[in-house]
Length: 308
Image (cartoon, rainbow, N blue to C red; front, top):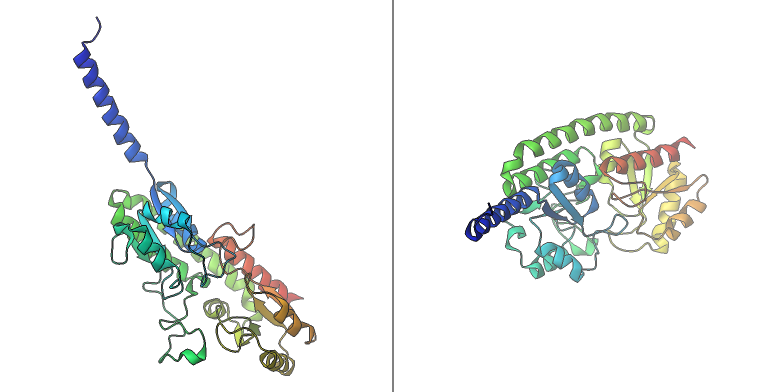
């Protein structure tokens, strides 16, 4: 006996509603992060409940990212946005958020996550003088380069996920605890590897390594930039060459987005001098796929430099 047309219509409506509910249950949260490091941690904590897109690449200078219409489209559909904060992205994040016109991810909204909350900050200036170069008024913003701060970042992302998706709190909490446990183990491993050269003096191109420096016991005594954000000058290069010779310093830390010519010039003028290009973010090199890889790579590079 064939069902009546009215009954068939009801069945189709019920089936459609069930399909819609199933699709809603399986839908992933759309998360946009400013940097790839935040993306990596968000993917770990969010697991299969999230789809994450990072605006900046791992080899870009995070201070200078060119806003694109495609980023605005991503943000307009996002359930959550995660930022480094501390004015690191001040030149490009605010314009993108304003253009996206997504009330769910504006500052102060449930879907807005400032990953710097509760991070113990370094180099917070007591006063601000722009004549001193590119000074960050809230403190040095490169805090993700201390892996211990990765736990605070993960906690902030977890808090954001719970705000926008409270039904999956237990799931996110399990992922958070697993990440923290794995990170604790890796920090012990990285610390043991760097222990032989604890206290070693090095130079850096730009002042973006204080958190890495503190975590692994290096001493960055000077920079190729005469002031933050000011390109190296001949007088500054002559000064650091003298310092390296005087104090028997061999290693200069560079970053992927700074041209190596100045660092290589200094290294050539110092007996045994070498330039080590470290990764500032996940994705800086093809084999740096996640937050753990970032420190495996950097600790390996530094260890290698001091072992030769």
